[in-house]
Length: 435
Image (cartoon, rainbow, N blue to C red; front, top):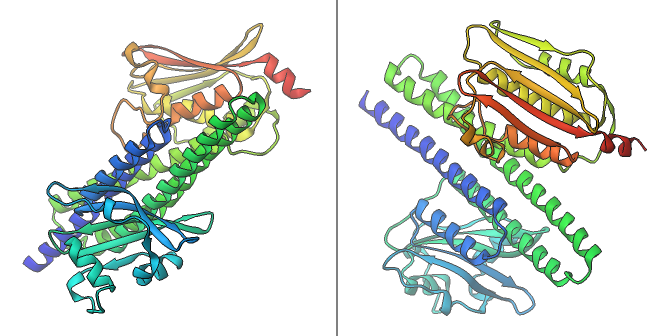
């Protein structure tokens, strides 16, 4: 019984640690996405410190490979208090000194030494002779790959103790390496843009490419995060099913809370994917039946029996992308359902035919929103409660799509009485698109 309890505690700790690790990675990713990269060195150094402290390393660093000179150079380094920096001693190091990890990196694999003292004593130029003078007991290095080309690696040294890494932690470190590559690519693109400032048309084109790269970056990073998250969800579900007879009520409650956080993170990642997809759609715009879209949305949503929906008919046809327009209505209707707190909830969907625009609205009699939050709620990752059913991205997706069509989105709300979300689509845009 005691052994089972210890095993359960260890597994709970592993799951909880993986959750915190992925939350840290999402936080770093969000910082990268929202940053203008004016000080890329500070961004990278901060993230090296955050990741290094989390995995309990004493030194984290980034190296670049130069295969023209067959050398590698330490370009960034973070050291824990009391640990001697090595960055100045590791410039233009011949790759012949590290054949083992270069071979692993060329295969796209991590190179890991759990205990340096157990390495073979292969002379003064051998790996053990290089690592021991730096006080390294354990290390792991992850390759950086850019356009299928090896360009460098990130590494983590443990000086004070032996350190171990499980497979999920290695997977997450690979995601971090990919994030750094994308960050550097964005910086390179921005530097190219600055060089072309004198040429207006070239500058505008470069900005467009940069925005596309940013969306692809968010899409790729979010997609990469889903794999380890799915593994965790599967492992946790299997464990709860397998141990359902032996777990007491408190244990089940703890595991359900962990599962709650996993599902919340999965929803967040899905939201990031949807947000980055807005600008990735390549299909041409067509005339879209708003009535048909509303019907499709309502068929996919779970509308509680106490909520009454009233839809104005007919709604005008719009010229645009079906996925984008569906996302706008779906997120606004979901929001109205989620914040319904009355015994008899009411949601009304309709529009006004203004001289210059079609003005749509989704009105509810729910909780309402304090006026102080009117501007904030349209910003990405902003939410007013901490529930698994909210990613804090839905309204930012609405704003991004409406802005894409040169429209506006705004809110009218009174706490306790309900909210009305409005969005407009200028008729000039529709007419121009039709031509």
